Length: 292
Length: 247
Ligand SMILES: Nc1ncnc2c1ncn2[C@@H]1O[C@H](COP(=O)(O)OP(=O)(O)OP(=O)(O)O)[C@@H](O)[C@H]1O
Ligand SMILES: [Mg+2]
Image 1 (cartoon, chains in turn yellow, brown):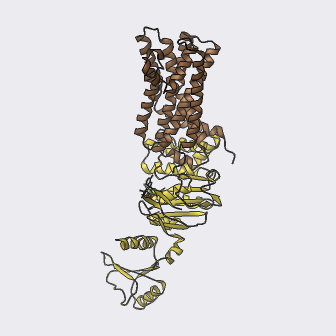
Image 2: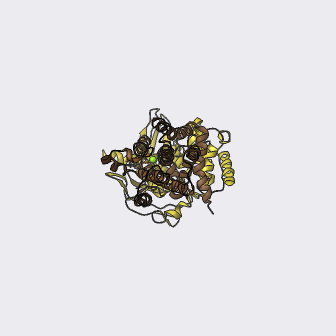
C-alpha cells in the first residue's frame, strides 16, 4: 500500500498480514502514517496505489461489502456537542440501520460497560475530554461490527480508565478484530496480539511481541543495582542510568552466561526479555541516529 | 443483518433537527425571521403593491436557504466532529445520509413555510393549478439547493469558510436576484445577469402562474426546462464530484 499527498510520502509500499482476530496495535511516531493506514483500511481514503483485503474482502473494490462489517473512531472525532452520550450512541446505531428500540437498548448496555451510566443524559459538551473519548469508543463498541478501527482510543484517558478500557477491549477482542493505534507502548505490549511498527511511511516490522524480539539485535535485558558492576567482556550494550543502576542488553546466549556468572558470585540482578519500548527504540531510534 | 432505511433517515433528523433545536432554539427563530423580514420590507416599501411577489419570494428563499443551511450543517458535522468519517466507515450510504439531512432542514423551515402558506392563502389565494405550479417550482429550488449544498460540504475542509460561503450563495441567489420583486424592475442589460441564478427561473414561474408577471407561454416553458435541466445536471455532477470517500 502506498499513499502520497503531493510530495509527502505518507505510506511507502507498506505490506503486511495479520490474523483478523484479537487485537492489532499500530505504533509509530507522529506523522509515521498510522492514521493514513487506518483510514485507507476503513475505506475512508483512497490509496495512491496498492491493495488490501480484510477477511477476503477487497478494501478498494468491495468497499460496500466491507462497510457492512466495520466501524471506526477517527483520531479527531468528537462527540457532538449538543447531544447526550446516550443519543450519540443510539443515533450512530440508527445510521447503521438498527431499529430505535434496539439502538436504545444497546446504547444503555454499552454505556454501562464503559462505566458511563451516570453521564448517559448529560450533554457531551459538559463532559471531560477523556469521558468524551470514552463515549465515542462506547459508540462503535455498541455496534454489531466485527472489525473495529480505533485511532488512538486511549489518548486523554487517565491511567485507571486506560486499564479498564484495556479490559473491555480484551474481552471484545475474543470475538472481534480490533485494529488500534497508540503512542503508549505499554498498551500495545499488554493488549495486542500483534504489533506493527511504522516509521516515515515504512512498516519496519509486524508480528507478535516474541517475533518482534527476534528482529532486533538484543532480546534480553539484565538490570543491575547500583554498585554492582557488569562482568567484563560483555558483547551486548551497557547503559548506566543516573541512579547508578546499569542495564545490559544482549542476546539470549550471553544473557544466560552473564546471569549464571552473576548468581555464582551471589550478586543481585534482574533479567527479562526486552520490552516493546526497548524494541521500539532499537528499531525506530537506531534508524533515526543512522540518518543524522 | 437487515438494516432499516427509515432508521437511517430518522438518525439524521434526530441529530440535525430534533436534538439541535432542543439545545439551540434560537436557530429556529432565525430561519423564520429572515424570509419574513424581507417580505415585510418589500411590502412596506411598495406600499403593499408587491406583497404577493414578496410572499412568493419568501417561499423561494426558504427553500433555497435549506440547501445552504444543509451545506453549513454537513460541513460542521464533517469537519468539527468527523461524523462523515465515522459514517463512511459504516454501512450508511451517502444517499441515505443526505436524504435524512435534507429532511432535517425541511423541518427547520416548516414554521416559516407554514406562516408563508397562510399568507399565500390570504393574499394570493391560488387555485389548484397555481398551487401545483408553486409546489413544483419550489420543490425544484429545494432540490437544486440541497444538491449544491451537499456538493460544497464534501469539498470543504473548514467550517468558517463554508459558513461564509453559504451566506454568499444565499445573498447572490435569493436577495439580489429578482425573487422578491418582478424581474421587469431590473434595467435591461443587467436583466440577463439575473438569469444566471436558478431562483430567477423559479420566481418567473410562480409570479407568472399567479398573475404578477405576464410572459409568453414559450418563456414559461423555457423556465421549467432550465430549472428541471439544472436540477438533473447538478444531480449528475454531484454524484460524480461530491467526495464521500477522500482521495
Ligand atoms: N490530508 C493530508 N494532506 C497532506 N498531508 C497529509 C494529510 N494527512 C496526512 N498527511 C501527512 O501524511 C503523513 C502521515 O500522517 P498520519 O496522520 O498518517 O500520521 P500518524 O502516524 O497518524 O501521526 P500521529 O501520531 O501524529 O497521529 C504526515 O507527514 C502528514 O503530514
Ligand atoms: Mg494519527
